[in-house]
Amino acid sequence: MKATPTPGKRLVSPNDHTLIMIDFQSQMAFATKSIDAALLRNNAALVAHAAAGFKVSTILTTVAEKSFSGPMFAEITDAFPGQPLLDRTSMNTWEDAPVVAQVTKIGKDRLVFAGLWTSVCIVGPVLSAIDQGYECYVIADACGDISEEAHDRSMDRMVQAGAQPMTALQYLLELQRDWARTDTYDMTTGIARKFGGAYGLGIIYAKTMFGASEGH
Image (cartoon, rainbow, N blue to C red; front, side, top):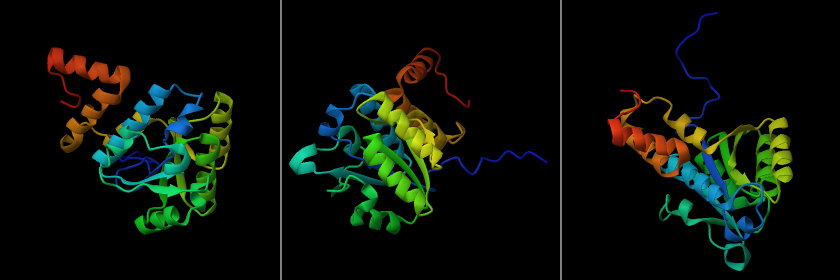
């Protein structure tokens, strides 16, 4: 067997998947206890800005936006100015015809999911999409639920069905993957500086104090 310097097929790239962000809304966030609300908003913003920056095909969907759940987090919609939100009545996004029609129209068989709550609004579409032959990823720290137990058991259930878990910062860095890709370097490090927590602070420090850049 001979090793070659090529990426694994299970790594995500900007053009090979559709991101689906589900129900990042006030009413859903109020009862979310598995992750701190500020961290959830930060991670959701990181994912949204990463997808927008790398021009990933993205679907934004809400449930009962006007009548019950409230608007989608501005951190997400700010990344996609003018993009319509697909509002639903169904808890399972995959049972909403307009959303599934948009998935079909985009035409990619790899889907990445993030949203609230993990045990309902993420489990439903992930298991449904897997049943129909889609390859699914779940950004675990850009999802949340009413308890840690609810979130963890939901992640277990999806992984056992074949979904692949990842994290928000992992998603950003997997899209970049090589610091020698100079056309997206400043964008990636800029998103990391703003939403990347301690890693972002490290980038700010290195750049300010030493003018350092990764890959140079």
